[in-house]
Structures are given as C-alpha cells and as structure tokens.
Amino acid sequence: MSKLIKKIVIVGGGTAGWITAAMLAKQHCRGGNSDVSITLIESDDIPTVGVGEGTFPTMRKTLSTIGISETDLIRRCDATFKQGAKFVSWRLNSDKEFYYHPFNVPSGYGKFDLTAYWQKDENRHQYGRFAEAVDFQDQICEAGLAPKKIVTPEYQSILNYAYHFDAVKVAKLIQEKAVELGVQHVVDKVIDVGQNANEYIEFVVCEKSGKISGDFFVDCSGFAALLIGKTMKVPFLPTNKILFNDTAIATQVPYDDEEDIACHTIATGKEAGWIWDIGLSSRKGMGYVYSSNHTSDENAMRTLEQHIGPKAKNLSFRKIPFNSGYREKFWHKNCVAIGLSAGFLEPLEASALILVDNSVEWISERLPTDFNSMEIIAKQFNHGFTKKWQAIVDFLKLHYVLTERTDEVYWRDNMQPESMSERLIESLALWKHHPPHLNDTDAQYDVFPIASIQYVLYGLNFKTDVSAQHYLYNDDKLAQQHFQHNLKMQAKIQASLPNHRALINMIKEHGLQKI
Image 1 (cartoon, rainbow, N blue to C red):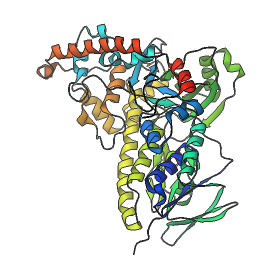
Image 2 (cartoon, rainbow, N blue to C red):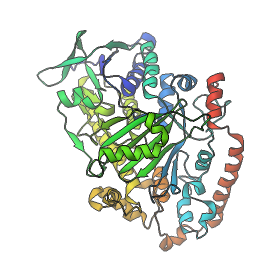
Image 3 (tube, helix red, strand yellow):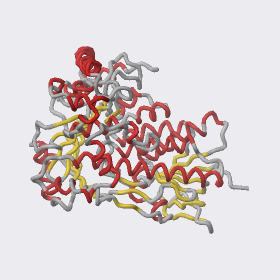
Image 4 (cartoon, one colour):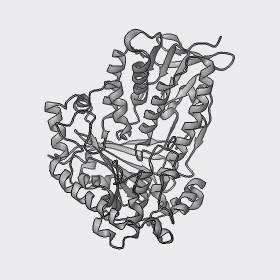
C-alpha cells in the first residue's frame, strides 16, 4: 500500500512559507476533522531579501481565502493600493517618456480588439497613449487616486488593484492566521536532512528541536534552497543570457510632509538597469536593479543616490546579488520548492509573488493523498510551472527589446536576437502584422494575460501594420464608441474616487466594510 501523506513540513517562513502554511491549513486542516498536520520550521537569524513589496491582483484572492482582513493588512503592514506599473525612460532616455501597464484590461477585451484601431488611426493621439486610449486607469494613477472608496467592501474594487506592503509585517500577519488555523510553528535552524534509500526525505534535524519527521516537505528556505538544492541536488537553470540583471541595491526613503503616495509601482530605466519606487503608507521602498557586466557597483550606487536626491546621504543601503533563473524541476520526490528556492528573476512586474500565489493554490487544490498520486501530480506541476517560468522570462524580456536607447551598451545588448527566446522572436514577428491575440498565449500556463502584453508592446510604440487585413478591422464606428466611452468613464470615475493617501488614512481610522 502506498504511504499516505499526513504530515506536511514547511522549511522556511517569510511571505512564501506562511502563505503556503495558511493556505494548506485553510484547505486541509479546517474544522479539526482532518488528520493532516502542518509544521513550519523557521530560523530566527535569516535576513529577508527585502525587495518583494509589490504584488499582482492574485494576492487579493490569496489573502481573502486565508481570511486576512484587508483593513488589518492596511493598518498593520503599511499597505497601500497598487493599480499597475509606470515605466519611465524605457523607450527613450527621458523622464518625460513613460507608459503604463495598468491592471484593468482594455475596453472590449476578448470581444472587440481596440489595438488594431488604435494602430491604424492616424489621429489616435487625440486619445493619448495606448493605455490611456483603451482604458482610463493610467489617468487615475496620474491623478494620484485610489481604486476604490471607503464604502467599497474589503477586497472588492472599482478598478482592479493589488498591494504594496511591508513583506516582513505581512508574513507576521499571515503567521498569526496560520497558527490560528492549526499550523505548528517551530523556531529553529535546520542543520541536517534525512533521506531513505529511494532519496525521499523522511525527516529534518533541527539545532534545538532535534528530528522532525514528515511525509511531504515544502522548501521555502529562500536562496539557500536547503531541500530542493542542497539535499535533492535539483539543477538550477540560469537565465542570465536573457535577463542580464544580477544585482540590486535597496533602501528605504522617508516621505516629505504630506507627499502623495503613488498608487502604482514606478520603474525608471537607467543606463545599466532600472530603479524601483514603491510607495508604502509609512515610507518608500527604492532600489536599483542592474547588470554587473554593464556597470560597477560604485557607478550603480552613484546612479541610485542621484535618483533619490539630497535624502540619499542620510540613508542606509543594502547590496543584494542574485542569480537569475529557476529549477530544472520544482517538485522532486516528496519535496516541492516555493518562493526563492524555486527560482528568482529580477523584481519586475512582481513575478516572484505571483508564482508563490500560483504554486500554493495549485498544491492546496491538488495536495496528493499518497505517494502514488504524488508522482502524477508532481509531473503535472513541473510541466505547468516550467511553462509559467518560461513565459514570465519572455514577458520580462519584452520590456527591454523594443527600446530606442541605442546609445547605451546595456540596452543595445538587450535588443540582440541571441538574448531572446525563439518563442519571443516568433511572437514579435507575428505581431508586426497581427495584433496580439488571446490565442497567442496559453491561458493555462501564461501568468500574464494578453492584455499585459498589449500594454507593454504598444506602450513601447511597437508598430502593427494591419493594412493587409483592413477588412477585419472595419468597424470604426464601434471603435470610436469604445474610445469615447473610456473618456466619459475617466471623467466620471475620476470625479468620484478619493486621493490615495486620504483613503489609506480613512481606512486606518474607520476600516472597510466586511463582504
């Protein structure tokens, strides 16, 4: 008889570990009627990476499922709302050059393709930038407005949104909920791992607690990858030939008095990478992600300090080197890696936490009952998440390949075909004559929808020539109705939404309604 899976051991805490613990407990330990137990082992002397403060809208579903109050999230974790990302100086080396990747999808998305009409309309600039023409969320961001009102219930929205938050505080908040749901919390350091003759993990040995046995192990140990890497020896597949950035310098910047809180991530292109600017309620998280092959650490620090301005002289900075890539497989034997142990790509578009959300949801819904079913589920998981990682690599690379910053080596190198995947090269060739279509992605595996691709592609001024298929895009009247509708909705919604900082302050004082 195949061994039943009853004891789950999670090695590592942080956001990934505690989301995993809470989601599994919510699904498999609720009501005290289950004989599944979950233990999370967390060392108290491991520093956090500190760049995972931006999220994707999937985080709303995750937190809501766990049972976290959105009001508590905002009050306790310095959380603010994120409506997308603003990319400054990615196409041209100019602070006035920018585009948005908002979380709202274009008007008519999935039914009527506005992209072709925006491309062929010689007067399209009357509607503004691509994101501005096909939706209105980027204008809401430009105005510094929130995506909802104080009377909008928790996790519901007027405009689609995610969060910026203090990842350490969020992990603590989720930890409390996980323990409440029955997760056993062990504060200790794993010093050894025991495997059987078939290389399945049977137990881990802790410095103070001794041996802790389990049937199923989740590696959330971060870059250390104690189980999937050091014990199981699963190879790491680097992506540095595609995504060049390998170092970050991070800091925390105080606000000026009554400074507005940006309701979007700001990513500013620099000579060898880009600078993130993430607004929390109490301070901003800022940092420079760059390629060490294209600049020195000294030049990178100087670039970041100049970007921050006079405040920089009073700040402390932390250098974070990283290897870009992911595991050859994420689930091996009775061990699955979630979070940084599974892989890491530069913190562009919050892809790390998206994959945590996706991984935990998959495992929670498909937790194997025994070792026989686990082999099948592991095979499915590895197939699906390999495709997800590959799709994210292509999507992140898309942000670089259409630049016009040809006077800088870093950006020129990013445009070289040898630094792109075959899939991305083929897609770009297709999109020269066919606007991105829902069939161009695999909805089951591609984390970012075709709308995201459209926002980046046309935000960077990509040209799609649809003249040969003019007969497919001849409903100009309907297109104009969509464009005009966006203008009317922008004015209506902009007049009704509160200032972002004002809403955060109101929530802290009064709270949001429960659903």
